[in-house]
Image (cartoon, one colour):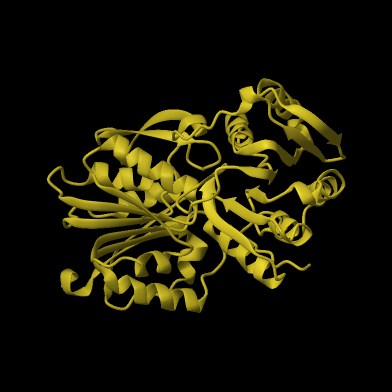
Length: 389
């Protein structure tokens, strides 16, 4: 088998050692004849899912990842290796929309090292809840989390069939006891890290609260590029629909909304993101801020695809490139410029100064009205040419 890897996904230069060790465990301890349905949680580029589909050709193999790019990469690698894998976005064992089976014979996962203990517990517990009567959960985790991991297995009353210590990883094969079959579907639930209060601009601005989750930046502070864009953005927004790309914990939309006029008529706030966890978190925090604001989460692999999927006009488009420092390709710029024609009001772009410098000086149909720099980040604000005139 061969795999295309991605710079923006886990293990971008080679198949990581932990995954290879888990595949070795599965090849020795799993009887393919007993497996009909397999689920790979946190599939990344699809190495585990595609390997299982190749090794157990009669099984139906499913894959989940919070990143839409990972789902696309898994589908690509499945096709390249001539196997069938159904890949869909989701968090822990729960797909975002696409219907998956209610139970599996085998669930595999390269568990995320930075997820946080409560999230690891949710991933493992939800996986165990979806196993059939004779199902198995097979996973690999980094060695520094050995004590955390084994404690969770004890708390969940798992029957450990094999636990093997490697130099940098631990591989495990477990089966659940009846007490472990508890499916947690609430959000943020175990993902909640802390609740914090923030303001946009100075202390006189209205405060907003954020239910921050594990494994997303900005859990206790407002990211610099968000502060930069909020400071650069005009407060005279026109009524309508507002799109936010890469909203993270939700700071950007909440900074903009808290600074806007109380009389602003908001028909809809659209959160677009590759990351299902970020999309759900930002949407949750906007609803918490104002339950009357209609919020829609639009999963999308790119900004351009998110804009193209919208059928109605957008009054404000807020694009946060975060900490990305690589230049945007000319194809991306062409697609983005074309897609922005659906925006009839204001466009804001924020990110690392080096990235912003790589963008074209002009966007067709728009006039730059503001520019703001702060601690290595830069924000640009554009307005429709006819409105600016």
